[in-house]
Length: 239
Image (cartoon, rainbow, N blue to C red; front, side, top):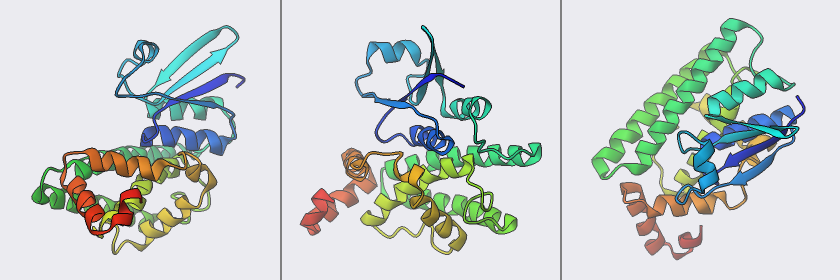
């Protein structure tokens, strides 16, 4: 496909990251444009029916189409670009799509985890996350996967879980919550993804600082932990 592609983004959005990873893995040139979701520009509101990122602006000749929703963007890239990231077999492709959806469910659980108001709610969400990753561990074990979800072949499932694991790089610096404890295959997958160039380059170098600032600003149990940590360990204020 010959088109001008622009990924409309936000610095912290994990759904943007999965699209950026897929584009990089396919070797597709694209531009990136970040928007302030707290102060959405009129042009963005006009082309984003749900008011969310990512958007993929596809320009050909003098015309432009805008695609919204990350799952749709990923499937569009599969249909139009070389280097497929889905399996060729329909049954395996369906399995991968299902685990992409499970990844989205994990992201929702991550949001509940860092937004929990009090300790009881926080511990409840921590347990729920651990149980979700236990399901992932069981799937990796049953399929004898590694280093990637589909074995030696990087797939869209990997593109989806890279941004999920990135959250835990910051969570681990706040406390030992044990979400991934006792899950060696998940831990190995996390490590492999953290070293993948497309995953590393899906965010800007200041992503950890931006995420920590975002978490600290929330009126949540986790934000209280961050503020207490900064008081106890002054250097953590800029970590």
